[in-house]
Length: 152
Image (cartoon, rainbow, N blue to C red; front, top):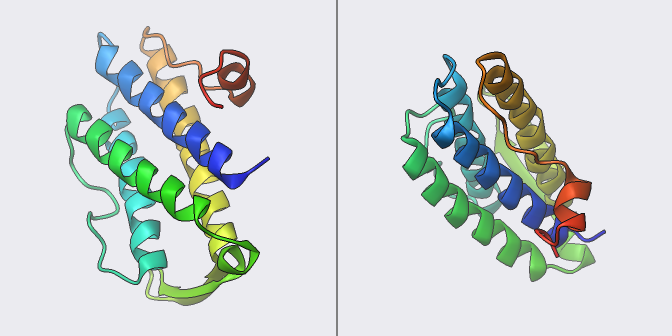
């Protein structure tokens, strides 16, 4: 599987999750914050890879509409960027400081995998919270997205 397909899935699943939060009759506490955190984390890693300042705080307060707009923008940036990389570009090491002030170095490919897995983890939390509050969470399984042609 290509990383661009994985990023296509990530964008689709994140947007479906955002839509399910927007449609919920009752949004559980912290659910909107977790949605905004997913968006902010993808922007944070984008900034680290591009060696730019962070666009958002790690836990920003954003409307659902802004989360969707930001997710589209950051998702498209990630996909376009990764589509243009070869094996050497994916293996390129980036150095960054985490939120605890610790220095690390990671390969771009590992960063891409991390953002997808990080989003998946939090989408699961959101789905559980929505279901517990009586709302229907988005069905964001990868195989479902492929079977339905939602991710090429």
